[in-house]
Length: 300
Image 1: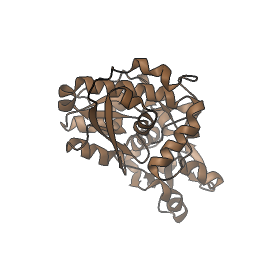
Image 2 (image 1 turned 90 degrees about the horizontal axis):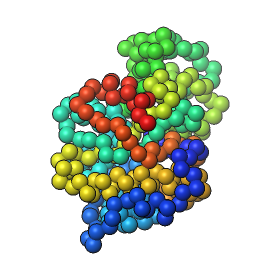
Image 3 (image 1 turned 30 degrees about the vertical axis):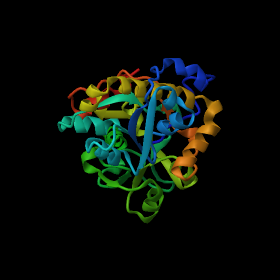
Image 4 (image 1 turned 180 degrees about the horizontal axis):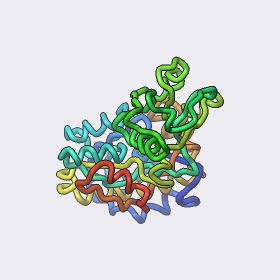
């Protein structure tokens, strides 16, 4: 998942104005190991480079992982204190007895600035959810939130998701998979969706089937670590909130882009990416994945 949009939650707020919301710094900085994936969790890099971590008394080592699932595995294996991943992963983990909890939000999806979409080739005869039955659809992860939203959209728009085969395909390979006929549709994300241009046609923005606004990813930790490190957990959550406000200020977009390029090793256009959420009220109880995903649209 991606992380920004041109729409800002807190335009005009600089990092200095946000610092009073952070936990007071202690004499000895608390060491934190955080997992950032190639398409999520960039806030950790921002907070590091603009000094919000240090001012909150945190010494954060941010490690890059290929995806949120890999970061989650490292978290459960106790080599990380925080990991950033989609909320469905957190819900599924809790449903299987893994003691993890959401601490701070990351990405907020907004339908008026969608950065992903269920696509087909421009000349495809597929026009509806019903037309996808018996066909293959490419998704980043079968267990991820985007795959879930695709299923929900299909079921709520006249199709049967049980008759659709989801296939994991990396974002850079999705257009080629469509052109080869390996899949009939692909749930593409930016910058690959934008890059595909007129070669594809948007069939739907499946996240709208759940709601026009939903928290799709967040920072989570094991409950044991949280119990033993409450001050550090609060400082981290407060820093993520301040970082979200900083990053959503369009005047910081160029600096944010440069920071991501520095750590990721390539440039990503942050201009169309979903908004970072400054605060959260979502509490992951021991409930089903479906209920958590269904209720995401109610999170304010």
